[in-house]
Image (cartoon, rainbow, N blue to C red; front, side, top):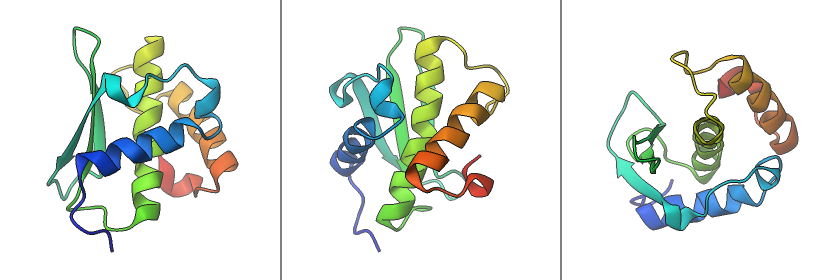
Length: 118
């Protein structure tokens, strides 16, 4: 089990995943440009929000993630939302065709279960 999850750990996880394919091929913002939050949500593992000013907020729930592998898995999921926000391709359908295409690649390259990922 993860001990009490911190924003610094979430930041470090993001920075690690930013070096992994396919994220290393995208122009991902440095972690210093993102606001990382640890929330207590049992319904959501995490979420990403792009503000009107273009700032990114990435949150991970300490109440629904208890293992390092799960943290990495859900970080990758939220990073796809961030990629889409940067590209301007995020739609009201959270997991549109582009999301599913990137998710398939992320899963193949990182050994994640695509049936659980989306």
